[in-house]
Every structure is written in structure tokens, then in C-alpha cells.
Image (cartoon, rainbow, N blue to C red; front, top):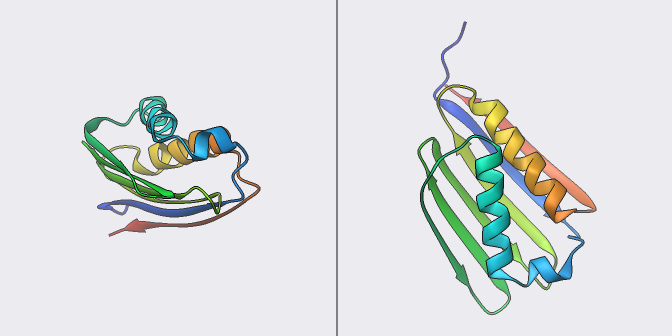
Length: 116
């Protein structure tokens, strides 16, 4: 069995459904926090910042990190996620599924890979 350092995902959500969410930093933070708990990941620290029309959320995890950029006006979200440790892939994919269910994009793209 191969030993991996971790699992990386880069995901784009296009045409997000709920306008109330995409313009609310507080709601985005809550969804991210709930998704992390749901995925059995562990927050070390979490910061967010609202620019004019964008929201950025940066989360340091015990398992690594999540960076999210949300472009509200364009209804577009990019998620950069790296996890390591036991069940890295399962936890990362679980988080993305949770986020996808909450954000309801019309279209997604995903790149995923184990890091050796």
C-alpha cells in the first residue's frame, strides 16, 4: 500500500443558487464551519474578510487547510482544500459534498489528487 502525504482538491462552483448566502459573510462562515464539523475535520483557526463584492475564508485545520474565494456578483466560488492524515480523501470529499449541497451550484469542476 502506498503512503501519501495528503489529498488535494481544487473545486469551482458556478451559478450559485441562493443570493442570500452569496452576499453574506456570516452565512458563508457558518456553512463552512458546519461542513468542517460534518466532515470530521478540526478547526485550528478561521478568518474571513469581505471585500467589495468578494468574500474570502481561510481555515487552518488540524489536518491542513481550506481556502475559499466567493465572487458574489458572479455567483462563483473556488475552494482549495488540502487534507492529510487518516481518511484524508473521504473527509475532503465529504466537505465538498456538504458545501455543494448548501451552495447549490448549477455546475461544478473538480481536480483531485493524492500527494506523495
